Image (tube, rainbow, N blue to C red):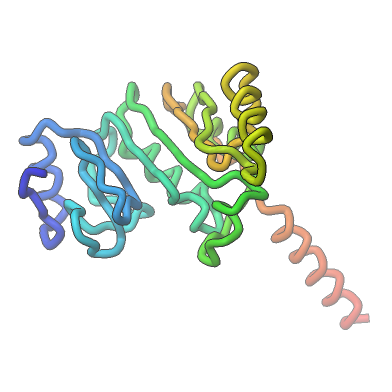
Length: 206
């Protein structure tokens, strides 16, 4: 990797270096999954990153990024709409986003105690579609791994019929970003909690 670490530099320096390098692809929340040819970004100062930043407040100009990768990232937020909105901001109009999330009900989803938001395939696609007009779905691995025969059947269902529900992780490739993003995920439990509080207050007043 080219020695270009600028973790201690400010916003203007980061943007200048990206423009000069002509590399306009970022790998956010990369952890130790450093991808060659990308600016590797993580909130933690781990080995191999190019600069440290919070994905909710990236030190990048609007529309300056051609491709963004977010692997094993969105599930760590209570509301994935927050980092998605920031990725939408920094992406160019013709830019693309690649997202990987653990499939609901799998080891990848439930063994990590830091995961905050887990959803099914339909919900994830709906959330991402609020920011991009085109969203393609793919998957990595298989859900059930106890039997070689069952693994083989799942691979056939995934590759031949596109049944990505059987994947261990889902991969979304999004493009054609919307001019006006739409937040399609609205936590219903927050609304329910507010109603309960109002009802409780009404009972106390009586």
